Amino acid sequence: MHPLADNISALKDNELENKIQELTRKYFMTSNYEVQHQITMLLDLYKQELAQRQAKMWQNQFEKRNKDLDKLINVN
Image 1 (tube, rainbow, N blue to C red):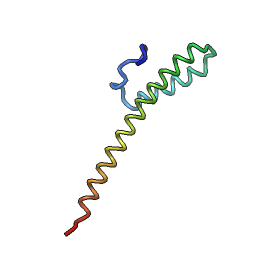
Image 2: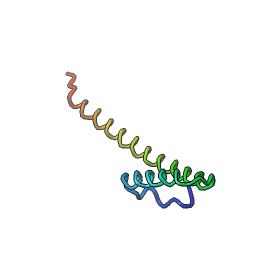
Image 3: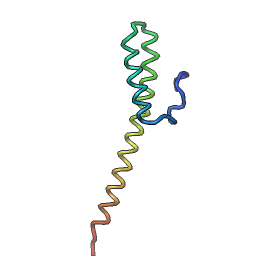
Image 4: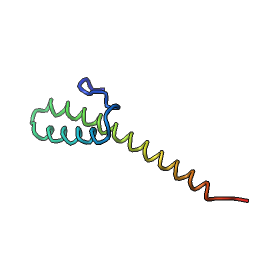
């Protein structure tokens, strides 16, 4: 966990995407290696959180789709 990161689980998906865009822009604005390193750590944290949320969403959709298919298959 990065000390400058707020509670990222409380952020909405679009807020996470906005932070990623903003930090990416700031990364390329600076030539200071230390600042770039800190921004990279935050970017990794936000991207990981977004990826986990998307994976969870896909998993939920997959499970729902499988349940719907089970109702269609009637083996008698």
